[in-house]
Image 1 (cartoon, rainbow, N blue to C red):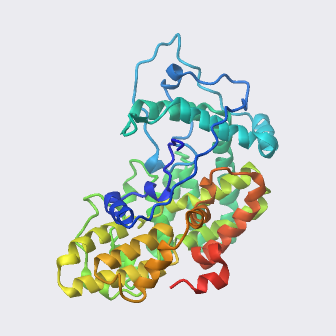
Image 2: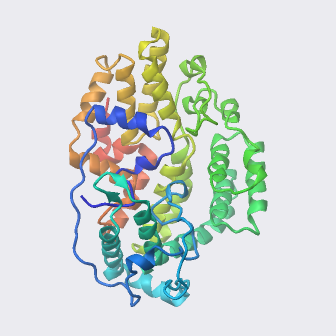
Image 3: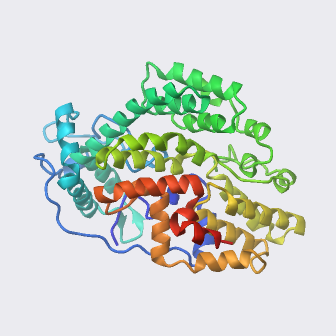
Length: 440
């Protein structure tokens, strides 16, 4: 199997009590294998020499603080290490507009393939595990440092910034509050320190004055990107409950740390009627902007930018805390177990549900004693009946920007599928409308 800094399954990047989720999924034998990938030696994408193992462990280059395929919460932080000024590699200069234009022009002919193979070479040069088990932190830092110096990675980060600069004014021109909030969020992620306080204040005022849960969630999303900003604690997540009392996710903690793991309000959870994180609504604001990008590096990064929100969107960790409580509730009174089954049903039917959520919901219902009852028996059979190919197709639909073997020829179809997934849900995008109707 290929070793990678990216998790084999993108949901492993979700912040939360992952032990519960892993135990539930592995216990039912639901994790599909990935096929081995190409180990061919890469051609050089640029004239720059490949970084040596010694040189790659040096100081990280100036620039964005995360690789393009990892959210900020999952990006490793290089430790400070002494360097020899005589041997330390030179930090690469930012790509010039002419260099970036040339790379974009060549991306579909050979640039993308060269970048993929350069990444594979770095994965072989810096294996992340010692004796097949323990993570090697030094190799992790070295691989990240080396990848940041790779020309394809620099181009991807530059195009990511270009897309945001283009999208922000287009969103503002729409005039509606949701688009204004989305523009504020993109501006904040660009880390413009001179403008960030004013943008934070504008987004905060929108979240305070609007009764729209999506704008409130956009503010919470922006909080993960703010540093030493007092405004970030101005709106507690408990305010979501006043906006959305019938929403299951509003009653769950959105972070898995002790600071947010408050006692669950079981009575309120039992009276909820739906589960919606509003992720699809936010993605729907950005999806039309992809139409102006032809297949190439721009469309690839646009797909990645939108699908990467799955990792960082607020409330993704709440179900894990609920699942842990339902595991403990397996020996508690029937009312508590009934609430767990109710919550599992809402998670299954949520528009934000993905492959992991479907598995998690069936496992949670089984723990609460409903696994053999209808519709849970049918749901469990449906999920377990998916082949490895089915599972990989579902994951590719949910995370198109992270798809291995990416090619320009598939990007237009990925864009169409992402729109279908956002509009009608994952099952409809994967199985078509007729197949989706058969999902229990």
